[in-house]
Length: 258
Length: 129
Image (cartoon, rainbow over all chains, first blue to last red; front, side, top):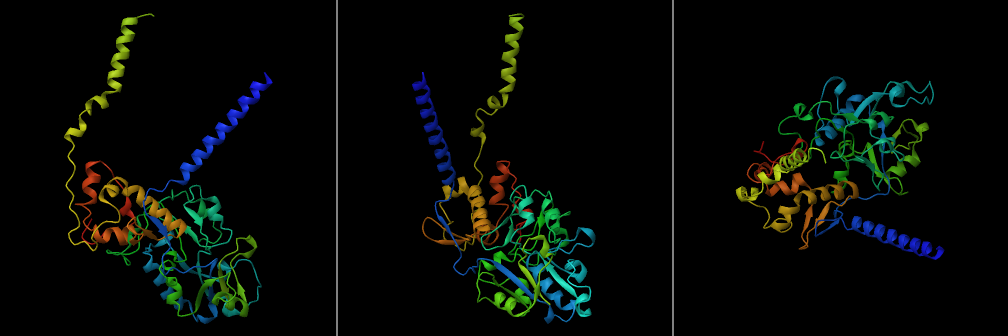
């Protein structure tokens, strides 16, 4: 009796193992295409992309406008007035940008300045944790990216993001874009999806710096935070920098020199 | 069994109605005419990335795979089975040649009652709506 139970368990265990490894094997062999995939030859690589914005080099809020415009026109971001606005990069005052009170008595020029805000591409992104469909995810190079195909418009990520960096398409964005769209090589979004800054992953893939960095004329730096000789690391080593809401532990990838 | 006659007749009628779609469409493929596609008139390339048979059967899964590879793994180049390299982009690679949406894509999609919503986000080449 004992013997037969023992042999039954042996067979059962072996068959479960065989079946499950077979299923795992099938899952690995899911690729349909007969070719293979590789990275672009000109693509820029980093272990952790980060941005350093030298706010000291900007004299007024007006100087940020062309940079925001460069981003929005490259990514076909519509101009929708009111609460349904869609923004990848925007301006806000010191109190809203840095509510963790550093000091009430900073220099007036700082307290009255406008700051360019965008997705912080956090090391611990809350939006990624709450997304039920993995439409937003963190890539190997630290970029918090989005796959609009998978977005179901639940807006958990908007609730999760402590920086207000995400916008929901309440209406069809094409209605608010010129025809043809500003950049016909880049898609628009559709009604019912959330969107945000992508750190220009699509530009990095072809060897270009992000649109805002290019438009800033050296006042916004972009590079690898893991590389001690990168421009961003040098700027951070030589200057005092702050990040937005550091006490939340999200570890933002956007630094402000003040 | 009570009312055996009525029950059996009922079962037969139910089975008949239930399987009606199969009977109605039994010779459905005979009436089906494969739509005539207009191939790219001024192609920038000699051939599509893979064979026509493969593309006809698998272009949708291939596009899904392209999307996941490009967006999630940063693999934005596809090396076809003949070794030629292609930039992964529906809008900037596929549509460069296949620029006649109505006469190429839509011909099959409409015939087969498929309604992909690629173009709510991706931009169709000029002259298509």
